[in-house]
Length: 102
Figure 1 (cartoon, one colour):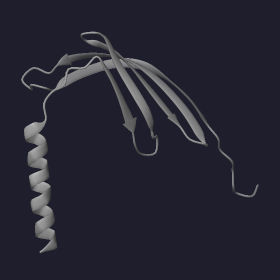
Figure 2 (cartoon, rainbow, N blue to C red):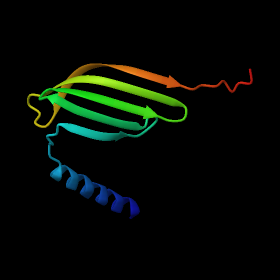
Figure 3 (spheres, rainbow, N blue to C red):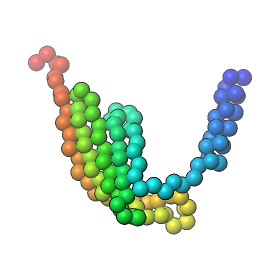
Figure 4 (cartoon, rainbow, N blue to C red):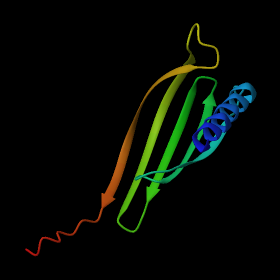
């Protein structure tokens, strides 16, 4: 019974999300990254198809900074979906101590 209720709630939630999801036009976006490399990200379009994205991840044991240039265009035949290509640089520092006793 519990599994069936969970399934029904999940289907209803996904249906509600997909029916209200729309493409968003934006010039600047700010976001959060979760997981091992948690941090913040900022993406800014300085031309209709060109954007800069900066990513900052940090903890007491590491620091990472990434800068990306991205060229983005709509994917033909897939409304709301874009393809992109880009290049960038990554700089990071990780504190590592060998706990092997040696």
